[in-house]
Image 1: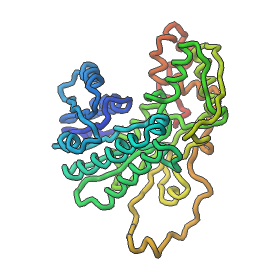
Image 2 (image 1 turned 30 degrees about the horizontal axis):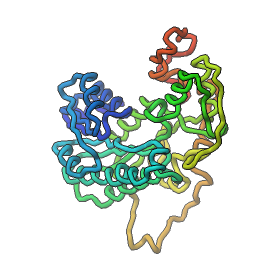
Image 3 (image 1 turned 90 degrees about the horizontal axis):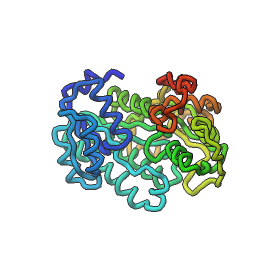
Image 4 (image 1 turned 180 degrees about the vertical axis):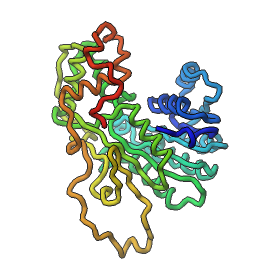
Length: 359
């Protein structure tokens, strides 16, 4: 992804920058451009300390703060040209049990970031969303859906030159809180892998390809755009079985039944959004800023047939067990897994950096 001419000599702010996404996007920005400064904004000083030692780059700086605190966000935003807004509460169980905390971070925190960016006349803001924001049934998805609405409202109403846009993607493989590292932990503890329903499906997207989408959006996104990366999907049973085969484990699989706040299948683009989406080889671009007039909203509609279904983990390309296994084996985290250090990695297919199954 060529971002060199866009981010060169610019100041970039990454909220929630010490997480899985933050590490990767900072690494990619420095590898592919020559920024003036990259600022990581987060509330975890230990993770900032570790990240500072890892990168040891004089152009990387850190700000302690919380997106819930509007004043700390405004101070961090001074002099910033581009913003990646990744700060979020993203684990479904945490948000289900503490929904108000999800509201404070995912909605009010996002509002603080958008307001501060507008005040500072930032060039562009890219917000990160999730498939759980589409037809949401849990607190995490509901708050991320409202974050998207805040971004769209800001894009429609801003009087600054700032461009507000976003990305939406499914399960980022091996990101913090996702199912694959949970399976790995259970295998190490010699405990059976727990799944809810064997036929439940989830989109699968390696983190580097998710970063590709975010950088592409930073380069090409216009006001109100939401970019969605097309992704294959797999059943949770195949994901669990693939991990057992990779680790050569016989701990087995325990089916516990579907839980509160879970869907059998996830949706990345709704039927209604497909009406205004532009489809490309590897992604959709949902163009949200058509002519929207408040007065006409009550008297005029759109005379167009609505597609019979959206873009979901049930109708995207379904990976076989072997394809699921090969995609997992392509992950850096698996390749560096201590439990697999004596494995014949060439025979496991680890020589391929990117699997064709994602394209």
